[in-house]
Structure formats: structure tokens, C-alpha cells
Length: 140
Image (cartoon, rainbow, N blue to C red; front, side, top):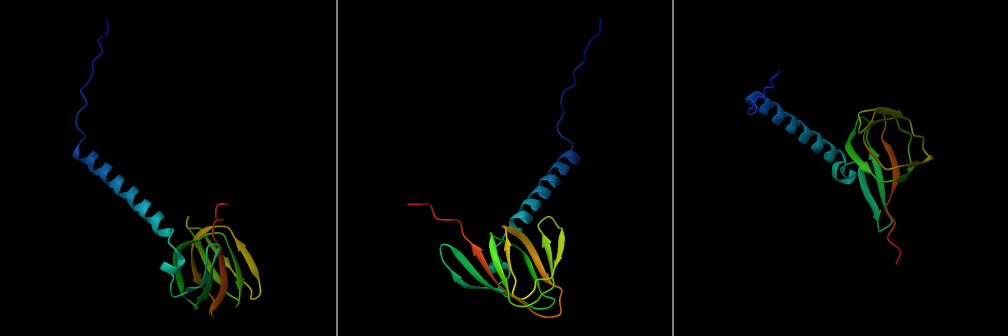
């Protein structure tokens, strides 16, 4: 006949507790990073983005990014942009992927909601008007 033995569960070792604590801190840091990446562009990029008009439907921004200037990670709702001057921009998305874009003066573009950072990698100031759309108010 075979006898089964059961071991008592012991308390976690100090090393296991330390590993669990470090994992919890890493998770908290990741959460804080995701939260900070969703900040309003006027709060984090106040030197580059100025509010021209804001009401219940839209927020209109004047955007001016000097050559070599960086706009920290921020978020926009869906928006339309009208480019006032040619530019050469490096866009860094929330997942770390980078895109190089060369918007041309006189062009208009649509953008879904996005979280990104922007760097003007060109040799001159880039400017555009950006119209952020706000959610529709509930019907009365």
C-alpha cells in the first residue's frame, strides 16, 4: 500500500516577498506611465499649443513647434488639422513606435483619437490649426 505525504505550506521566503513587492511596484510604475501619457496637450505642451476657441462641440488649437522642439507624450480626441507651414515631424506613439511625417502647407488631415509625442526634426518652425472634436451632447 502506498502512503501519500502532504507537506505543510510554509510562509513565503523573504526573497519571494521581495520579488512580489518589486513586481507590484513595476506594475504601479507602468500604470503611472500610461496615466501620464494620456495628459492634455495644453497642460504638457503649453508652449506649443494655445487654445483659440473652446465650446461644447470643439476646441481649436494654434500649434507652433520650433525646429528641434519636442512636445511630451499627450492625447487628443478625434481631430481635423489644417497645416499652415511645411514640416518634418517625428511622431512617437504610446507603444513606442515612431513615424516620420512631412505635412505640407495647405493640407488638411483627419486623425482618430491618439496618444503620442511629437518632435520637429526639421529646420524651421511648424505650424497648424488643430480642431479637436468633443463628444456629442445627449439629445434632449
